[in-house]
Image (cartoon, rainbow, N blue to C red):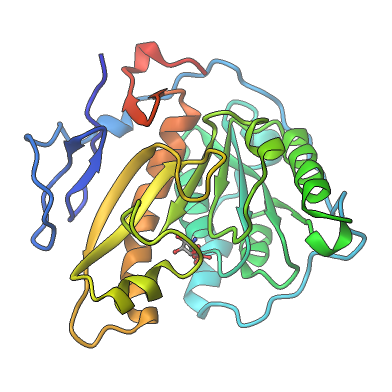
Length: 299
Ligand code: GRF
């Protein structure tokens, strides 16, 4: 039997055709929300691993430093204040590798969630495709290993995919999370981590796939858009949906303002999805993803 997914939150959110607590701004309808607190059940500890710390890039000779156009101080301070859950501290935790390209606010949400001792998961590696990604700085502030893997250092996309696959696999992830990673991953990468790669996209898929989802939604004139947290398959912005949250378009919205509100929803949903995947609680049949009971967990 599947189980409705539940966590407290101001907006209504949907996974598996069932809904979560209602909010004033959302148009989803569904059955009664599940009991709050479900996500605070203890994690299964099967498959515990030890993580040996590694530093530096195995793909690029360039240092992974350099932060351009970083976030406000508050974000940095938040990252710096959290207890790192890496190295020996994560011996019993599920291992999460995060791929980023930019600002890394979704990565920050994951780092914050993983800093909860009860989370049972740890971000063990952050990979960026460019050295200026502020996500790298967030990772360093949280004590997480970083690697820069630049496509330009590889002869073609297939070679980059293979190199990326190998360095991610070397971190032995339970979950691979694309948190604003702005590259299309090829089959060699996707097949290496079946049903273990999760992405967040700033639209209600299947609407507005692609790199400019917020801009495209505004240009189309939609009244409601949102975000989709989904598993990654070999098509772009296409895999089974885990969560969606609706975000109304408000008068005067521009791309940045709307995207910020969408990101707030992503920050709420992505850590929950990663945690459930890490727990082995997500079952996939075709396009349908459902939440398994804790005792059904496979990892
Ligand atoms: C998110 O909105 C994500 O959906 C999209 O890129 C944005 C990344 O934001 N793919 P951040 O780097 O996590 O702040």
